[in-house]
Amino acid sequence: MPPAFLSDSALVSIYNPATSHKWRSLAGGRGMFIGVPADLMRSYWSVQEREDYCWSACVQMVLRVYGVERPQSEIDLRGNWINLFGLFPDRSGTRFSIENNFNEFLFSQFISTHGEGAPAPNRLLDEFSNCRPIIVGYYENPLPHHAIVIFGADCIQTNGGTVIKTISVADPFPGREIVFWDSEQLYRTISSHWCIHAYN
Image 1: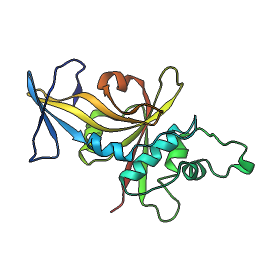
Image 2 (image 1 turned 45 degrees about the vertical axis):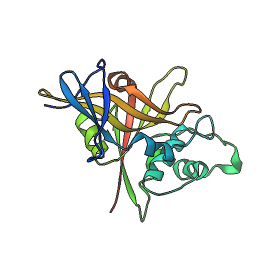
Image 3 (image 1 turned 90 degrees about the vertical axis):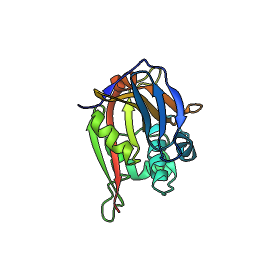
């Protein structure tokens, strides 16, 4: 059975030192956290340096997960090409702005795959189980369109299968940092996503 979503359940945190996951006890099943630990993701978090640089900050965070440091201005240059005379210092990102930073022309270290809407729950958990954060774009008031990095999920194992309760988010908007979203609420707002893999 494919993973499902659950929006209302009380969780009690329990840590199992024998694994990299946080196990949780709750009525009706046992749960775990799958993905990059939030404390580790905080060390990769970056704030967007300009009003429209949410996408650039998200690319920067994912690159940091893989050990690559790249300034947001260089991410903008790689993504949107040359900014003649600096006329557009705050450029928003497109699908290709993100992909151009991973799918480089000759000797690319990464491959980025774009998808419309939210990733399928099975794909989401597969990426998180391999500690691969995903960049997503979503619609949010008062921001018309905003980019964030999702990097983990609290899941419940039940007799009926895996249920996804919350999704961990690294939000580059000033003052937000690491936040936790109800999975159903976030999935309804996602417009696109990028899965990034590193070549070994």
